[in-house]
Length: 252
Image (cartoon, rainbow, N blue to C red; front, side):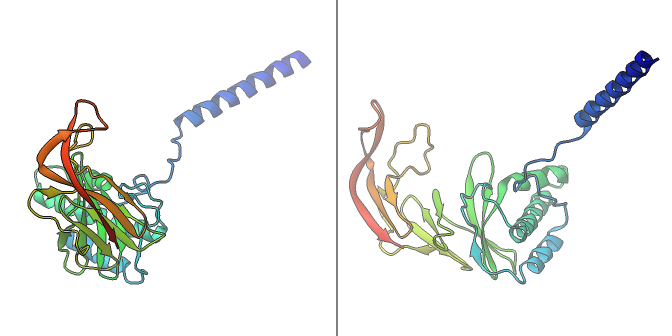
């Protein structure tokens, strides 16, 4: 009798254990929190998306996103995530309006994967719009919805150390400060003619911008090249680059 009882208990425990395993396998795991997985944005029209963004910015203290790389890797606060969701909704609405024959969900996904928040002002937002080919920064006027591109092949954000961003372009260097309608040219940084900050070496990096520089949170030392003259690259055997003609130092 005791053997039957023991056998029955073993069977029950086995069934319960199997049931637990099945339940665990069929229950979706909780995703690791990040800017993409926590996005609860739904597709709305552009006017609604802009109005939602304006409402969510009413009590925000202007600031740059801390520890930001412009690629969605920064950990956002609840307040920042809400504004980022508003931006995703706004850009998704614009993508959908420009492509009415395509499913709106595809444009929502594109915006979720390609719109990143860099700085929040009282009126202006600095954001990155990225796709498979390129990432570019823009200044969004939240009152009008207008967008101003920020020139620059490379960009750097210094928060929390400084509330400023630095942009390196082929022939100019610019900074962006909080709540500004445009980026500001660093005095003396504008080049002309065949001079460029691009080294001319592009293999494995891309032809847009490949400077030689060292920087701190307050200054940058950058090489200047002549794009009309090609020379051997001393660091890459067999490769070519533009001839270096000097260096410049800028504080910002």
